[in-house]
Length: 632
Image (tube, rainbow, N blue to C red):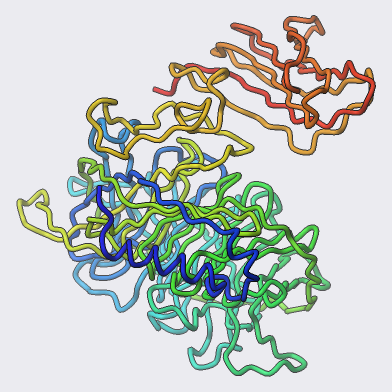
């Protein structure tokens, strides 16, 4: 497939700016400039066109770092009336069948709302996805997807009128923790970004009488929170709850133009942490100036507790708040990207480039630097808001997939960072990608994304010709092995091997389905659950280390693999059952790798023992694999 003129011109511009060093915002030395490479690759995408009634422009999406949504996505439409929240369930093998969708109206369809939607998150303590929460510029909306009735179906909708301003340019993301606390940001006065605050709502049941009041808690943090000052396109001010600590919330302070630091004045350009439990210092701020980035926007947290944020300066920034270390990663073409969304997924980080019509991912290699946080105390303040019980109209249907091949680029920076990007407007009318979330039901490098703009039309259930709300899926090639592979035996996403377009299939050496798991351990007719032990302790001469792994009643095999840093290391693997009996052992290691397998293991907890038979200490990485039947 040929490259569109737009994509070609952008790729040439990227190479030119990279060589000059301007894409990263710094001047690279000639030696470093020559070390950068840009490699064109074809990338396949799958898109779905849902009938737009009066709403349009799919925006925010859920980032599911736990993997509980698998091959499912949730998104909201941003403009028009009524705006809607959507759940889309594609066919497990995407090109094999239609996707099923359900939508819920976020406002009275008879009254066009004077607001736009922002963040979308959904969670309950049981993670059953019953409640869907949506942030708008006027209110916080909750849909109870399991409390529905009527011949014309409606579901209970609760609306908290919690915003002091309805400025459509001030749209926050939304975070919900495991205890159903809902966190958002806002600014009291659009012209005064020092008046920004973080808000927590603990939502109760909808008021029986239809109306009522609720108390929220606010922390007046300033720093431009709730605002994206330089965004040329829709932007979300970021906030996220820590996945393992119920008291920690992270949010973006994008900065205040012309602000002069002074006692009591927070000028921003920070990633900030709020501890909602402490009575002492409860704010930590890490300045992005330390890594040459500015204007943090949407942020999310990976399963290791690392905070990732996209910035108006065109960087992806990661923060380790425990070690106080940070790094910035310059997206090719810098601030021209006008990035919107960020989606961490184990070893890679997805993002959307709204300004340049790209969906990409970063394979981070650049090292971190120490950054000392600035500490502060902000008092919590109670505030009363009105609550309304309403009914949301429900609609549903099915849409076929549309498989396409677009131009992609793999850019390797001198610092080792690798960017893999898909130009979704290549011979395609999709542009302005907004929300993004990893597809945890497939391998790393697969993402769902929202298409902000398209020119297509479709026919709805009333046989009316309407515009479309478009969302897509992208499978980005991995130019190097990922450390924590996720099994994916459907690399062609349902297209028959002999009928897919040129450039659709991607594979890697010794990894036919390009999921990061070597062919030797990857059965195409089963599902491998892989656990990689990070930072395993070094093993001294003639010593061993044990690692537990659990099998189920349906497990087909248990495989223990160890890879040593030293190719000459003499290592081995033994597997013991719950009774302590040896049930599997490896052959002598070859090139620093050894593996043992137990076929059809009984359910229970096993012990994988790594032995060092040599005379020197061995640094190693264990990989524990449980093979299960394929998902239905």
